[in-house]
Image (cartoon, rainbow, N blue to C red; front, side, top):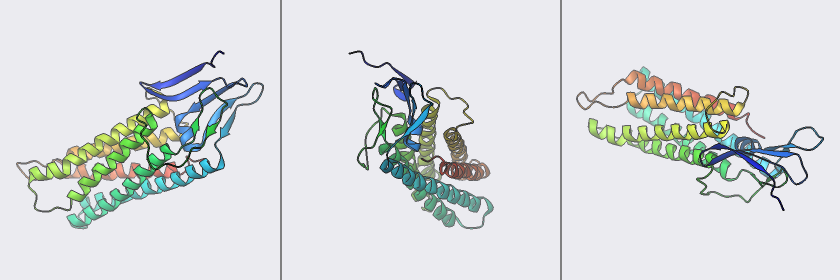
Length: 279
């Protein structure tokens, strides 16, 4: 029996959109982000209008709950990081005050990162070559699926939040030399920023199905773009925060603080937008 034709799109080893002909005719289109965020798959039935087939009620309830938790965590995390940067810039508190606010924001980012991973792990799955439908699987707290762009993006994001936690904990230490500051605080900060940028790039790959392009009519694209802008600003901030051994001071404290503040506001804004990307 001849197998139904399938057309896969994506980049490298990642498939982010799959089109096939169901046994009953017509076509079905699975796209990674709409399926895992909104629980939908597009079906073109013969002689009928295009429709969105939705996952079952259990899957949709999961997606709504996880989306709300992740979005809230990113909004709060970004807001707290912005407050911490403002405290550091305008001198309205000592170093411990700023570090405490950053640490609270970091916990929110940790939560948002892990819940984002849970969204990917527990998203309804498609059946290639079958009817245009999404299947709900049992709940899982962990999976290992590096061949999926969405899983890898979420995993790298979560890893980045954990690396930032090391940086934020070390920032409470006092009496460090310039070399110790760069090793214990600046280096983890840089690594976390790199991981955030990698995660954002994978998210771009997922939603653009390969090469980056402008998709201004898609809410998911705006969320990814604003988050990636925030990651870039965090990287600028981290570069400016390098402590010069000769002087024992940051390369540019103003850029470091303003970069953190602007980047944090981007993450908060993306979190607000995420509330609307739900089933």
